[in-house]
Image (cartoon, rainbow, N blue to C red; front, side, top):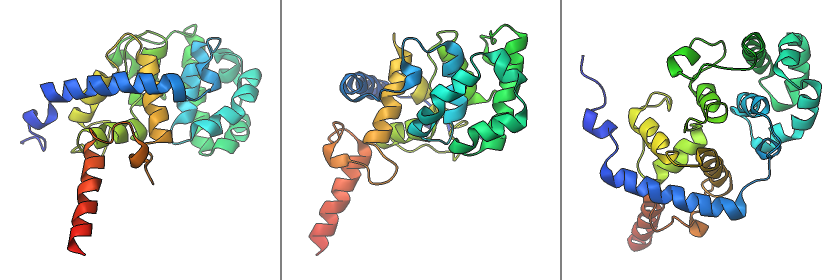
Length: 241
């Protein structure tokens, strides 16, 4: 059966790579000035905290997770304490950030594995896929924060920045679109992939918002396909009056 996406359309072109590299450099400069001060970005934050936070951040605003951060990690200072926590207790603790039942079970399953393996997760994707509660996003977080492997924290926010700047993906599910995945991996292919991830996510939250994006104030306005198309639509609307 033929693939719904041609090999050519799924590959990054030389132009794509060059544009993404420029995007990366600009995002890092922007992040130096505008990056958010979030507790898990502190030099004192442990790998345990950083991985747990990524579980909590899925489909939740960073500010919402930041509000429970201190209390959560004071109560569960390590994988073992988190693994021993009753699911009902975790659900109560996680209610302020929503999806508490799902999160409680996921983070408890992850903690149980970690506690049994002295906090060390596999460094290979195929082995990570066998770990309970580890999907693509959490696997990338583990590779990034524990093993130092440049890996993108690809969620709808990172996808939005890349797609607006370059072009839309072909598949509905961001986890399985080959072009988007390649673009995200190229974005973080550098000496400081953690900062690139954080810069992209912060830029998506502050400027490249899902609703009411601040295109007029965006540093990529002249280079972003989404912004250029908006300008063209505006000119067409004006000309038709």
